[in-house]
Image (cartoon, rainbow, N blue to C red; front, side):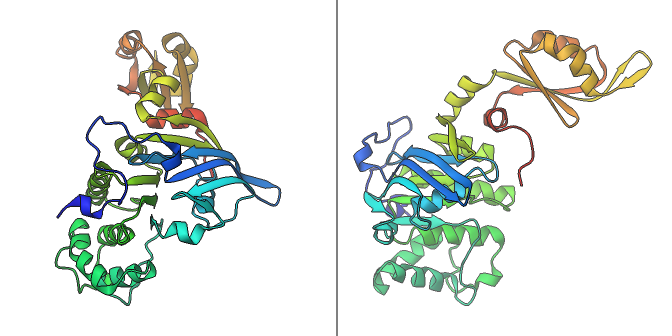
Amino acid sequence: MSTAALASRKGGPRTEGSAVDTDHRGSPLVLRGVTKAYGDQRVVAGIDLTLRRGECFTLLGPNGAGKTTTLRCALGLTAPGGGTIRLAGLPVPERAREARMRVGIVPQIDNLDPDFTCAENLMVYGRYFGLRDAEIAARIPELLAFAGLEGRHEARIQTLSGGMKRRLTLARALVNRPELLVLDEPTTGLDPQARHLIWDRLKQLIRSGTTVLLTTHFMDEAERLSDRLAILDGGRILTEGAPRELIATHIEPQVVEVYGDWNEGSSALGVETWAARHAAALSQRHEVSGETAFCYVTHPAPLLAHLATQHGLRYLHRPANLEDVFLKLTGRELRD
């Protein structure tokens, strides 16, 4: 089965290390100064965004950051309060319905029709795009093979596992050979095996030239798949760039997580007390969250040597990652 056959009509296959298209006139999605408010609450506060053909671009942000509203405005499902949007080269919301004919969408929650088989779900969805039954029928075997659902043509939706349903929803979004594939938290609720299979399928699409717009709460997913990403909060983009660039720009290169019950002499003390007495002198920056002290350092040797002599403390030494950047910029407080 050829992944290229499932990919966009525009944008050729991408090889490792090749540059994606930087011509904004050919961008699948451009947002300029987009705003949206509900009453006095400004949910989107001036978003500028340009997707390049053949890249995976990810929107990250805590709950309530404005990700979903931004997506809805971009797709013409919610009218923006201000700004301009071009989707697949067409103005939105004026020609949103026409633009969406060239887009594939994988929503947060699977909305497959339980009364239909796998093949029937693909057939009915293809008709929404004006495709002929013969054309859809010819694509169904390769779409099911792409989803790892060979031999499941006649299977009812109720008989599929959660991972199978998610893969079928992804295959369904490709029935019209979209120029842009939009995925809203595509692997939430899946087990690790299903997540890795979805990642593999998405990487195939990206390599074949399909442009992908992704939202996710999984930082490892964003690091693995994204060419570029933006972190949103309060309806604004806080930072934008390639994952490794953002880590190098915003965070110290090494992190030591310290936890446990610190014992000094005969006294049993918590990690907060240890951090208050020692972390500032041994790290460039530190935070205490719950029962863990996060120490951010460039040269970890002095801190590690100190921790080796502290009774009751345990620690994990690791490279900085995208989650560290995300938490630094958006905070560690819970969002409802």
